[in-house]
Length: 318
Image 1 (cartoon, rainbow, N blue to C red):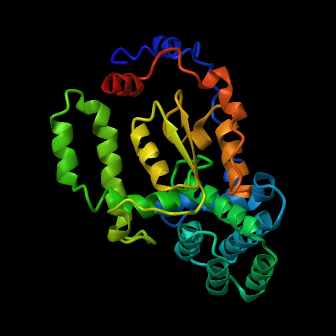
Image 2 (cartoon, rainbow, N blue to C red; image 1 turned 120 degrees about the vertical axis):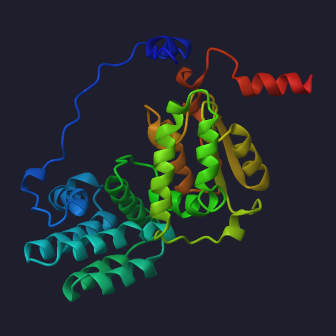
Image 3 (spheres, rainbow, N blue to C red; image 1 turned 30 degrees about the horizontal axis):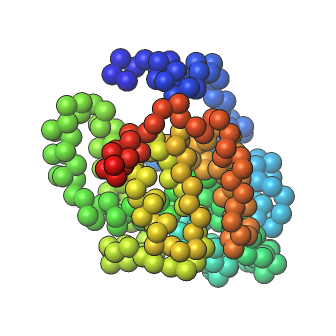
């Protein structure tokens, strides 16, 4: 890894050579974006305009897509009518953080009443009135996609708003920046951690105004619940150890646990095939039934060597 020999690393993992990179294509419609009043809001402005032109093709047809389309079209129309761009982007951000409160219909209605015109608000709220619990979840998922694009991640399957809702308490409150700086100063390879430090500083700034549904005392102690849960752990995850997943599953008696030995962080969206995400989606549709993990038996998810944490565990129990 120090020599950046990616091909060797992939051979060790049994993944084969690196696939030929495909040049990323810019989102459609950005050439028609409005000229921003401020460079700070330019990225979000471009995203909003592009979404207004493409939204119907991005999300599956249904109430969730109709709600998103109603809101985005309304915000884009306000820009065309000359509304202050900063105010429009502010409303855009208000929409993007709705998922932090969970699939709450009242939040969608409140947002429409406050941030949309009377006509658009009526259309949006009529859609919410017709939504099932699944529709609400899909709507929040779609809004999460928007939040990820705004944050520069562009990664489906990662609830960025919920991530910040937790990290702003769990990491920023409990881990001062001085601790992180001292840790990096003593690291033999500080360059590896430099990007992490910059991101941590940015997270501190974001957390100064990011709304959080949690209190510090809510996450200081392990929680126990009878609610069905699907717990994933990844053997190659450098951010969340496998042991954390095992501990969580033990505290959730109605949970279903699976370890993906070949995978790293955020497997549901980063796995090269849809297996982890398909299992998660099926579980959300029927949380009371044990998921079908058959696709997880694919050879792709089997390491050609024994993971270090398993070897250590075996040695401890002998």
